[in-house]
Amino acid sequence: MINQDKSANLRFLSNALRHVLPNNQAVSLAVLLVAIFLLVYFLSDLLMPVFASIVIAYLLEGLASNAEKFRLPRLLAVYLVFSGFMACLIFLLFYLMPIVSQQSVELVQHIPEIISRAQHGIMRLPDMYPKFISENRILQIMNAVQKELLTYGQNVLSLSAASVIGLVSVMVYLFLVPMMVFFFLKDKSVFINWFLQFMPTDRYLTVRVWTEVDTQIGNYVRGKFSEVFVLWAISYITFAALNLNYAMLLAVLMGLSVIIPYIGATLVTFPVLIVAYFQWGLEGDEFMYIVIAYSIIQALDGVVLVPLLFSEAVNLHPVAIIIAILFFGGLWGFWGVFLAIPLATVVKAVLSAWPRLGDAETTICP
Image (cartoon, rainbow, N blue to C red; front, side, top):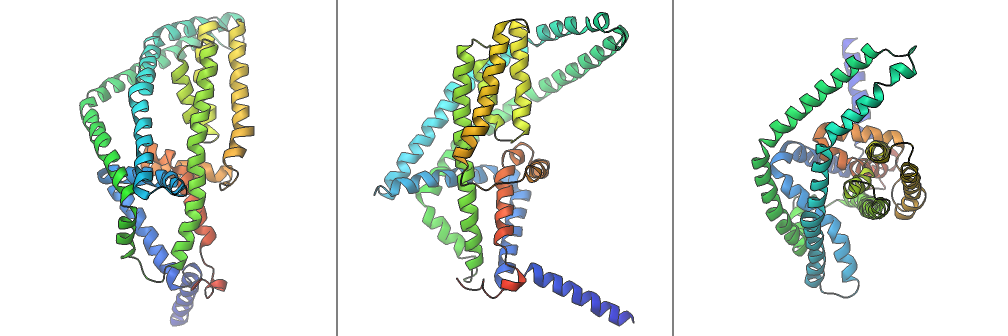
């Protein structure tokens, strides 16, 4: 009886394994995916400049390939694309970031004034609604908030002590990453041929999965970068025209908010409205203009930009997006959140192209 139970369990495991890995190509692809995941997971801290360079080179490769369609030599196309990349990097480092940093410092310096005005407004609540809230309760809440802010400020100061090490790391990134990006673009065929020598010769399934992943991720990432730039530009022009304080900082937050769907748009609403409120108050017409302008920008993003830029991109269910953000964010922090949607797209593409037991024979050859 015990032997029969063991045989039944072995048959069950064997059938389950055959359903998951119906042929040799599926086994090879599974081994490759596990190896890549383990490599990134365990060596991400050491090789992050290399991984970042590969991602950037992959994104720029689309531009280089399009340039080659105009009969430009590969080397010339690489030089043109890389020059544009360096121009954008210089603009980001020497123009955009100083302005954002300056406005961030100004905003931090005005936080005590903002807190004081907030306290003044909150202390009026017991007089307005004495049945719902008491002055003692308000004081308890404000003391708790002040303690939290004090703790946060101490943490910021402790982090600033490590700023020298962070500056050295940034300098290393600024030197190594552009250099590796250039060589990954220039010697693309050399690196691909080197990598293929470790792959099995029968790799039709892997090529099929990569083709689907490349199409979907390329559309998504390039569309997302375009959406970030357009939303940043429109927001900055609008906020500057309405004389909103910290226009560049808030515009950058608006652009970056689209990286995290649903959540980002919700989070960026608070700083925009808070800055407008403490600048003009609820009674001023300017506050209402900001609310209307912000609503129009968000509506244009959802109704015009997203359908236009992502018409060919993969559609992910909102639940899948939230799960991807939680999972990959838990693994790799900020970068996991930043790359959650592309990584979820990879997972969906792999699952869509994964062979089933019924078509195991048809995936052996094209």
